[in-house]
Image (cartoon, rainbow, N blue to C red; front, side):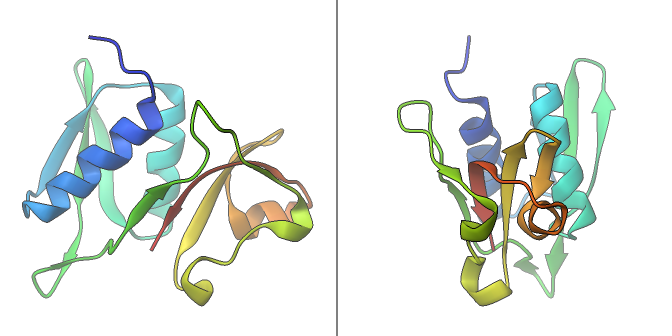
Length: 127
């Protein structure tokens, strides 16, 4: 079965797995998903991820039996793309969260994109 929006599918699978208190979640692989998971791992929102055959296994992270991720929001969608310039990269939850952008330099976290001085498509917000 093909997925219309693979980024929204990834975020929904992670959101549902956190809600059900699962320790891992399995997603199908793509370079975009791996780049998003790499950023989530660097920022401490997941414990890690690994390739297992034809799938990617994401290890979810909990602190005192509560999910580390409080919310995931897909911003730019296939039906309505949202682009931001370097000066209008949003601050998520007053700096407590992150936003992820697709830029000409690859998939970047919002603060890193601002440091480099590039804007792009605002993919999602995580807090």
